[in-house]
Length: 248
Image 1 (tube, rainbow, N blue to C red):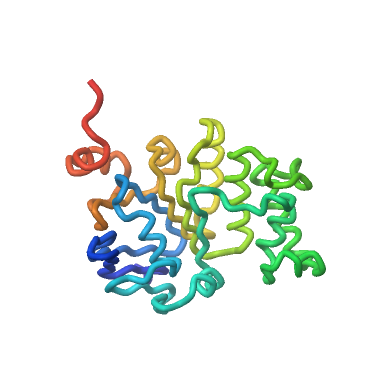
Image 2: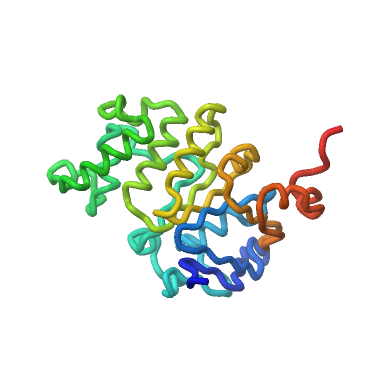
């Protein structure tokens, strides 16, 4: 098997004696699609924080393409090819949809500098391709703040893709979406397979099923089990700590 693209090895994170992660080891490979699930407090957000440099582990190692991420700034990690979408979509609400995507695609992330600079034609073409794919072309000149919640989620994902990261970390990408928007978001994320390594954290089991990714279950900061969703859902440990007994 090829070498992991991203690897956490025996990672623990302690906040004043409380361990959010305990000896967590996890590998991600190039082009892999993985879903992370688990009860509240399982360590899912801390897992993302460690990868993106927001939190430094109490112990353990985190490597990306063989290079340690420990002590590397969030900005440097982002520029190295790891992108993150937070639970609440972060967009520039006073800028148009097109400007949001152009800013994401630009090597210069300063909005004022972008107004006076031009993107290469290849970058412009990619921005329009992504905007069209997520169905936001009719809203190109609309301020992002005027979009629906679902459209803002798609814009946040599209903005992340426009940065061309190797790893996409998506935190609850369908929170608050309608069933139709959820299905479209699943199709969008699946389309990223191969070109990107994608990690999705989500509670919506139907959405997880639509994705068809392998699932990793976290509990108390550790990997409880991994595998296809049906196998994971039938695991007595997962039922006990997360899913609960089936309704009678």
